[in-house]
Image 1 (cartoon, rainbow, N blue to C red):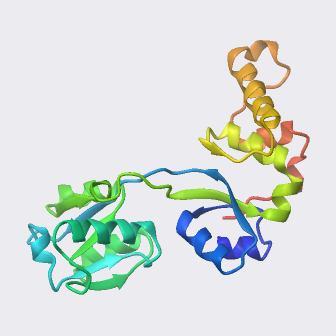
Image 2 (image 1 turned 30 degrees about the horizontal axis):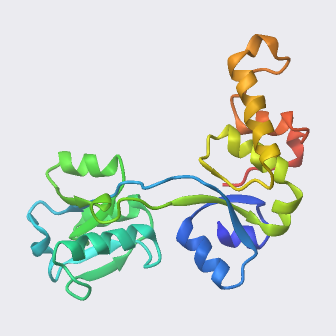
Amino acid sequence: MVVALNKSVVDITRTATPYLIQDVLKGSDGVAIAGETLTPIYSLIAKPEIKTFADLKGKVVGLSLAVDTISISTRKLMAKNGIKEGEFKVKELVGTPVRADCLRKGDCDAVPLGQPEDFVFIKQGYQRLGVSTDAVPSFLFTVSAVRKSWERKTRTLWCATSAASHFHTVSCATQTIATRSFAWLSRLRDHPKKSSAKPLRSISTLIAAWSLSKPSWTLKA
């Protein structure tokens, strides 16, 4: 999605934090405007016969790209439990479903999985050796990102959408904009009958309320 952002295919996107950092270091105009997912938990799930971290020596571990926080936290988890880089083989697989499939087929001996896939495998007899937060207790997993040029022109809009989505980290230009956004949303929540606007149920409703007609923006998957 960072590539789509750079090519102006989209104006705002959600991306894993390391990918945005890596892109900015290469000269990208992208900038994070809101923090989203904080510290997701990934379980290191292994084949039933692998009981301990020591059993992973010489085995194939399916990881995401090296820059991904999933790979970083899994490597740290393994190192913390005595398995150093070079003592296991790596198969790069992006996405929990892909890694789950590798484990299920037997091509991977262990993989980091998110929920609910990790619970499904545990129920089937696979081993959970540890979780990512054992090694990395806190990190910002994903952010909302835009191009700097677009950010400067639309600050009021994205501050409002961030407020509606309950983001905890919002880089608004002025406290006035942020205060206005939250105050307006609070009035709708606390006194819906006194407001001429209907209670907000989606980002699209909020955008329309901020005088941006719905046909002028597009959602791309």
